[in-house]
Amino acid sequence: MDATTKWLAITAALAVITLFSAATNAEETKPPLVVKVVKGKKLCDKGWECKGLSAYCCNHTISDFFQTYQFEELFPKRNTPVAHASGFWDYHSFITAAATYQPLGFGTTGGKNVGQLEVAAFLGHVGSKTSCGYGVATGGPLAWGLCYNKELSPEKTYCDDYYKYDYPCTPGVSYHGRGALPLYWNYNYGKTGEALKVDLLNHPEYLENNATLAFQAAMWKWMTPDKKNKLPSAHDAFVGNWKPTKNDTLAKRVPGFGATINVLHGEQMCGKGDDEAMNNVVSHYLYYLDLMGVGREEAGPHEVLTCGEQLPFGKNPVSTSSS
Ligand SMILES: *[C@@H]1O[C@H](CO)[C@@H](O)[C@H](O)[C@H]1NC(C)=O
Ligand SMILES: *[C@@H]1O[C@H](CO)[C@@H](O)[C@H](O)[C@H]1NC(C)=O
Ligand SMILES: *[C@@H]1O[C@H](CO)[C@@H](O)[C@H](O)[C@H]1NC(C)=O
Image (cartoon, rainbow, N blue to C red; front, side):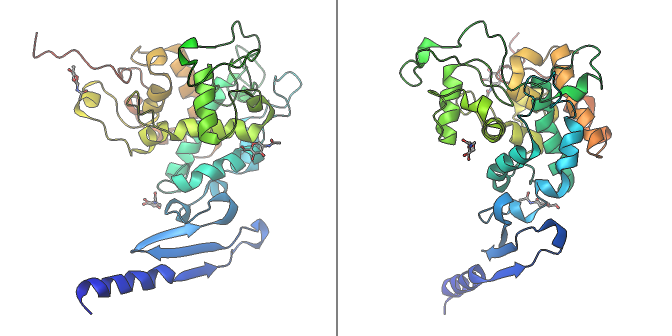
């Protein structure tokens, strides 16, 4: 056997080694963990929550550190009679939607601590976008996340004719804000529907009828880079898969929660110092970290946590060398 054949034989042998280990905690009835080693890399399948032999599934999955009671603590007011989406959002739909993205690293990148931070970060954005806790609402303004699942009094139908060939508006249908990270405009419903293989262009209302789909659309947005506009995904910007270029560094864009705000709301919220809308997102994130028992000090320093001093993605500092 020459060296190459031998190596091939070894990797082939490793590939068929499959270990089964029964769930140790009988109460939780977790499906058995399947571990395979392929070319020296450990891959896992944890059943419904993290399926399909991925390195990420070997790590803690979201239900290991974020459970129903924690979801209830984060969103305690969402089912009160005055909440606008009372009875709509629940933990089950969140975790079902997350099952699609955990094998890709959502909540499963790095150790448990990074996973907790990412879940708090994602939900921080969701909470601030769906909150109806203004002013002196009982429980404080931060207790009212997931109060909405749609824009209540849209003033237009958000149909952009520029996309009439790719994403033509369906007559009589309105593309106003819906979902957990609300979608607006025909082209956003069109793109998201394509990715999720759901006909959102003809049926945008699916997002206000199906909480799993609403969370899934939001997670797809969180996990997907916007290649056309050269934006990293919020996920990559958060966990540090995204590496800043020299221009990013000059523009003070660094991986962290601030960069996720920059990805999702750059022009609206970033590079404006102490912006109120930006602070609202940050406050939700920090509040959720506290409730999850992680502690807000884990969020890092101000320049990582906010995008107040970051230029929006796409903007670069004016070069001083030429002036
Ligand atoms: C799994 O978690 C460990 C830390 O516990 C981390 O070093 C590793 O990178 C994680 N794996 C993946 C694929 O993120
Ligand atoms: C809700 O959406 C999920 C995810 O796309 C889908 O699997 C499920 O069938 C939908 N439920 C209903 C009642 O349409
Ligand atoms: C970096 O920013 C300068 C303007 O300050 C711009 O001319 C240049 O094209 C940018 N480089 C990249 C790679 O975007």
